[in-house]
Image (cartoon, rainbow, N blue to C red):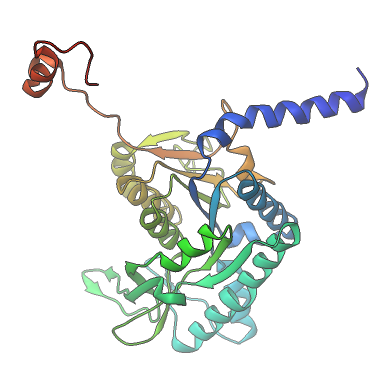
Length: 321
């Protein structure tokens, strides 16, 4: 077999291996969050854009939510504004909010939409402000028993999916910046992109939430070990959550909330790996950390009067279940 033929066979095998995953997810909605750190490398962002187009062309309905932390930091510095955090959240003054809004929706979103549309003219950019898709109120974390004002940082109070569903029904790929307006004071707020992705996955009834970040997944014993936890149930994650590092808390909380609310699975994967979105399709290759529902507890027949009645009725020739 020539090297060229061998390479072609490897490509065919890869497509064949991905087929079961693609078949299971036909017509399904996937919410995919691209972290700001995973957007720093242009080649990785271009590979991500190509992956999203592949999913759409393969019959899935991807929705993209993007972050932009490193890019916001750089832009704030150019404007002479200091980067400051409390309780793991960015303190966002009204002036800083203008920079955040410009960076997220004016630059990063447009760049990502443009990359996707280079491969197929399907992407449409929007923010949570559009059609009131996301409504927020000011988030005030508690530090040392006291509420702290961190400025224009919001928490989601309502999700409306009409505009997003319209885009999906038209075959488009929504690309969403994590900005939301408050009906209480009219201000626009910056919302954690992990939180936005989880909220949208829940509201859209997505089958899967995928978060790309700058780590390989949830580590078992960081910083003492870099072994990744491959799979967690809701109950297992709830026990681990208080022990996690501050950077992983929003991501894993988002995964937890989404799966508890009916999303089939949530996965944290390494956005520093080219074509990470496609790699997680292949069976048998552990990639990142997946959060799944707790296994259902099936009550024994002898202890379930309802099942007894259903299966012991005279004249039935087949099982109801």
